[in-house]
Length: 408
Image 1 (cartoon, one colour):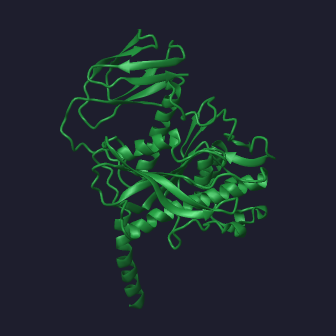
Image 2: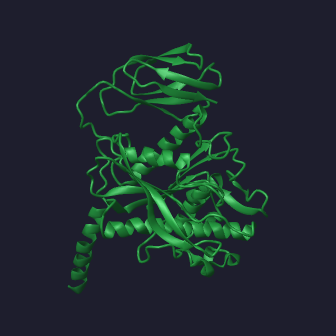
Image 3: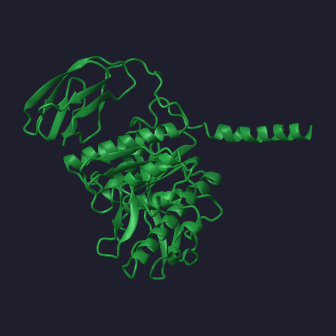
C-alpha cells in the first residue's frame, strides 16, 4: 500500500511538469513564418556584472527583441553571442542582430549579449580562459531570464525552452555552455576555481543555466568527448574551407601558440555515436561566417542559416512539426528557396499554409535578362541548375515577392 501511495504521489507531481513542457504552440505559422512584422527592442538591458581581465568590474548588457503584439504567455528564447575571437565584436554586430530579428518575427524572444573581451598575455592559456569567462557571462544571461520567468515575468519566457546560440567565438561559448558541464573536463592550466567555476559570478545566482539546445554557427569545442549520451541536441552550420575556426579537427589562435579544437565536422561523428541529435549543414568551399555581411552572396548564406536553424528548433518545441490547415484558402503570396547558395538544385516551397495554384515563373540574371521560364506545378519543387553560370539570379512570378537565387 505504501508503494502504491508513493507511486500515485509521484504521478500527481509529474503531471504539472508534463503540462509545462507541452505549452509551446507551433500552429498557425508560429516559429515557422514571420507572422509578426513589427518588433519591440529593449536596448542595453543589464543582466549582470563581472570582473574582467584587468581586474575591473564590467557591467554586462544585452539587446532584447520581442514580437510586437504577441499575446502568448510563455515563449521560447534564443540567447545569441557575437563573434570576434574574444578580442572584439559587440551585441550589435550585423549577423547576430539579423538573426535575432528574424527569429523574433517568428514568435521567439531573442537576446544578443555582450560579454567580457580581451585577454593578456596573448597566449594559448589566456584565450582559453577568455572563452571560459565569456561562457560564464552567457550562463548569467540564461539565469537572468529564468529568474525573470520565476518572478516578474517581464519577458514571458518559458524556462523549459531556452536555447544558447552563437557565431564563431559566440558558438564556442554556446557549445561550452551546453556540453562543458564538469569541472574535471577543464584543463588544470586554466585554473577554473580562480575564475569562479563553470557557472562563474556574473550574476543571478540560484537559478539554472541549463538550455534546451544549442545553435553552433562556425564554432568548435576543445574536446568532442564533452558531448555525452543524454545531452541536449545542437545544430551546426560551418564552411568547409573555414580558415579561422577549423571545420574538422585543427587549431585556432592565429599568431598565438596553437590550441587544438574540434569544429562542426569533427563534432558530428561524436554526437552521432552517443545518439545526440545534431544536424549539420556544410557550406561547401565557404570560409568563416559566410552569412555575415550585406552582399547578395552573404544574404543567401544568411537565408540558409536562418531556415536550417529554424527547421531544427521547431520540432524541439515538442509540438507537431507542421502547420495545420486552419486558415481559409487564399492566393499564395510568398515562397522559400533552400539551400542558398546552391551547387546543383534549389528546393522551391510555398511558404504559407494556403491553397497552392500552379503558375509560370521567370528567372532573371544580374542584367535583368530572362534566362529561364519555370512552370511551378506543386507546392514543393526542385529548380535544377543545368547550364546556368555561377551567380545571383532573381526569381519572380505573378502574385509573388521576387526572391534571390544563388548558384555557386
